Length: 457
Length: 109
Image (cartoon, rainbow over all chains, first blue to last red; front, side, top):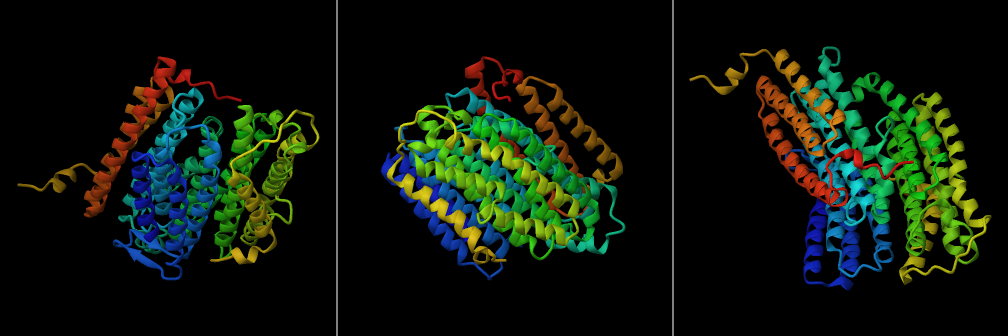
């Protein structure tokens, strides 16, 4: 709750800084504000406070996921000065929208009432529609934002119909009351309860790009400005998966067989479609979009597992995924800045003149594949063990085959960087660029080597 | 003078649910087959309004005001969404001089 207040104030402050044209101040103020929000968030640890008639319930689960959200936003914003180095104006609108969308993300991780979940999703999505189109004079960006808007509001309709049916079946929006009602009346629930639950699942799957509702993701990720894509690929996914887990673990745990079958089919489809389609991509951003689809599949394994350890598994997986994805996008930002192109061939021969960048790209790709001792391996290990514990062995086999397949496309840019020939001058980012890249590499190793420090829940 | 909630209950719940689902499906079909962006917006609005009606009916039958309050949230969000959507449509129109969504085919693999 405190973090929502800090973020809302920070967003308004950002806009005021833009009005008074203080371009130099804007990023330092935002990043220190986000650090402040991170601290305000951490101070509520173990307190388990309820606000406004249980509309917001801040427990350790939400605090941990808020932490991942804030950290990944800070990391994305560190690249902002490099990405926008040719832009003259202060860009307060873009930054403010990013911060306001975080408010939505916080609502999604800490809701205690389905109304709050809906509001959170909408705050996050509406800001994202605008951010995706923030490159106003670029047709690709306009198209991406328009497609995102159409599919997003279409899925909102499904989510709402699902919520209405759930309300009709149980007579309440409150998670605790709904859970008690479902637990007591598990055998006499009307048909539209099942329909409602599945529709809510479909609505959330749209937002998370889980197959067969993933078709918008590649276009949107490709067309949006790269910095925004990095933000979208991390924040929306983290907040969405947290909301998904929180809703289904707190409400529908007593009717497991009704939804696990559907979700396990979705998860298997997502892993297969995401990994197979990614192999054929020649564009780096599009490939990462398909990779993010397949990661949504692995994450839904964590939701299916629904045991004591799956919360931690999801937390570590999201953290590992966020760090690796942000690193990859950070490299794309710089490459695109000097070549104005993000095809995989553009990366040819980067390693000779830019060793650190190439190393970071390699590490992030290896981490996304899940090679030990990197962060991605630990994330996958936790998710898969917790899924096996709950008896989803067949799904884990599909997931492992999928990750083996993913090596094919994750190694493409690595091969391009080290083996292929190409002319590259040393690319220079802003002074902070090298620092943040090294920080990200260290983080990826750190999460992989001492994962138990991050086991919080 | 009968209260409005009694009047609503003249019609059985089943029929309201069927009507709302029909309205929702018309909206879905509209989004899927129409190529004019404004008509798509209208269809989305129709989906949301079907949900609103359903929420009101359920709230009357459960004798619980929460559903009706939620309708206001939905309306608010729908208004915000349309505002954003029309702004995005203007941006697209400046490039393509058309509001046909088939023109949006630059991003493909």
